[in-house]
Length: 417
Image 1 (cartoon, rainbow, N blue to C red):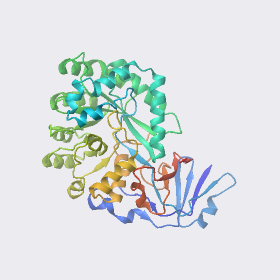
Image 2: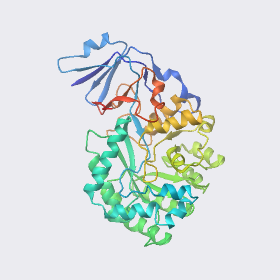
Image 3: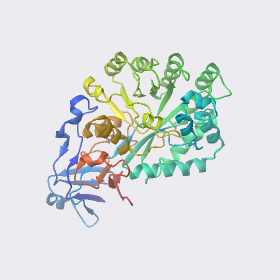
Image 4: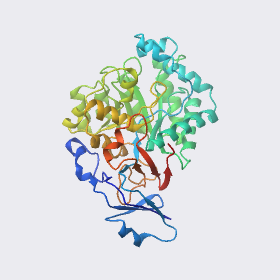
């Protein structure tokens, strides 16, 4: 069965070879003028036609015709760094932060990752599945069509496998964004371990079982002074690569801890946070083809400064943005994240869209193996129809979703607002 979008407004197609960097991120040649039609066959974009009249030849009695009425169209958004599956409410920590307590202080006071770990270990799969499904539904209403999510709130073999199994089960729900799963056993050091003993457990016990399960495509490490140092991070990631996993890494969230140099040396897919990465390391990452995954919601939630996103455009290096949804940063809207860049940090709205679509598509591939994060023939039919006839509106409504309908893997979803 075909779905035919007619009377389309401007289409931000982003049909370019990625990653898109530098001034190319704001190139308006990536936008079609209004008037085109899009033909979808199953879950794939079959054809983009010059006019709605041309679409008649592709229609039949089984075709569904959707009149877009001149509304702007953008690709499905890709959230390339999130922590969707966990239990436990850490809302009380906001006052601790206001009182001047650091991230490490809060952990020592019974909050932080350890609190979430205890609640997550105690939760059964049904509870975790149901809460994660609600979160994914919220993300979908803001235009997210694909999401990377991590384990990391179990911190022992059984609990880490439990989180990855929940993600695997959710990935079979066609009404939800597709999922790219990452093992983040090296998220924090559980109370029952030292750094040395837990690193040994990760490599000798968790990693072999995780790799054998096939539940994670990638491995990740929280490389930060006070958590996992460069030496431990390198060891875990190298062993993960030997086991067939792709590599990602958290780096330099609070200080420059040397994670950028390690990311470049290992040529990881994406080095995320990277707020305090030094300029030399950024150049090394660029030369190594490492994507920098900025997570603007984290400094927003913590009340700290944003990095200079526009400096990445001057550097001509690949970068993306993601929500980093987690217990301490409960943001599921990529348009809100982009609003922070555009309305507070003077980033071009087209550059922000590139950082939410085509660039992260290369570090978080679609499970079908087809291109996504762009609107072109042969790509997955992940498309957002905006409320406005102006594509720039995609990141200008931080209090509500700019998306009136989403085509998710070829299936039309009209959002109820």
